[in-house]
Length: 191
Image (tube, rainbow, N blue to C red; front, side, top):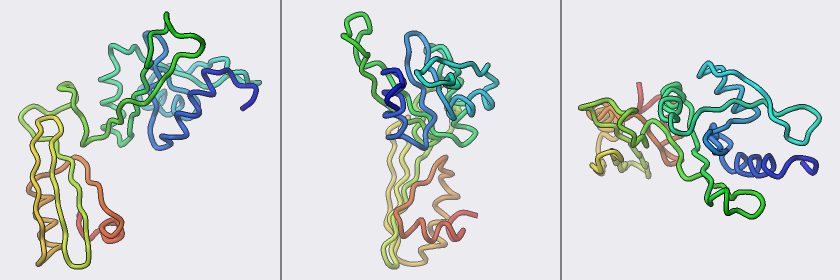
């Protein structure tokens, strides 16, 4: 990494913090993606895969999208099961001394969509959290696009009631505590 350009070092440090996201890395008027993210985005979004000098012997695979049109590209990736990390320039490039500071300001997943262009009109976009502890469960359904939050505790017939609540609210995304993940991975909650 010693011979990499400062910008590419910064990108790799950010990517290391968000390994499960496709990072939309802001460079001027574009969000650029590099290395495996670029290969994936190029394939999924039908973008031209190019390369960028990064200080290594080979150019870093790269593709990009205009920042003002990122929503449609992010929506397509999210609909295909990818998480998208939006990495913004945190200072004015014209005033920055040296490398522009950048930071991931948002992770977009199916349950955290806020943009109207990514939402289905007239339908809630719930994110569901399930926490199991012994023979009890806590469920929370939140629609971050409207601010609606619904929560319940279940102490009897846990598995059937969880299935019923999931069926009732049809969440776009479900997050689980470790105990629920162990049971959920066995298909006990989601059919």
